[in-house]
Structure formats: structure tokens, C-alpha cells
Image (cartoon, rainbow, N blue to C red):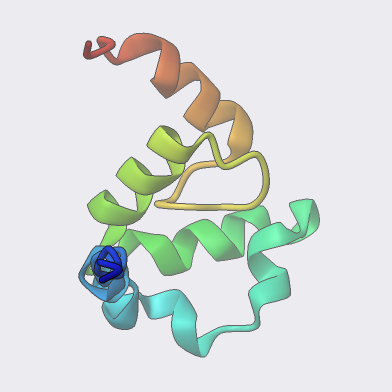
Length: 88
């Protein structure tokens, strides 16, 4: 008799991304957040966003190299990454 291992699927990740459903940028033109000429307008959207902290934390942790995330440009996120303590 052959015993097969049960298939183990990864845990659902929607809970990890549900914060994006409340983001103000969801109703905006995505190009605004990836165009350096529109940086100030993109950041203005972020200022009143209810998930700005989650967005910023994600972008810094993921090393997101492009666009405005959590009200920060890539260079601003880079500086912030250097300031945050590393965890083991």
C-alpha cells in the first residue's frame, strides 16, 4: 500500500495585502505615483491616506525601488532604511 503525503498549500496571503483596499491611491491614476514630475501631487494623496504607515512600512521592508509609497520617494525610503535598526 502506498501512502502519499498530503498536499500542503501555503497560507492565504490576502490578509497581508488587505490594507491596500483602504488606500487613497486606489482611485488615482497609477502613473501619478511613478512620474517624477508628479511627485508632489502623489505625495499630497498620501498625506491623507488612512494606510500611509502600512504602505511606507511595506515599501521600506520590501526595498521597493520605484514610485511614491507611503508618501516617500525611493531615495527617501533608502535613507529611512538606513536609519531603522535591523532585526535578526
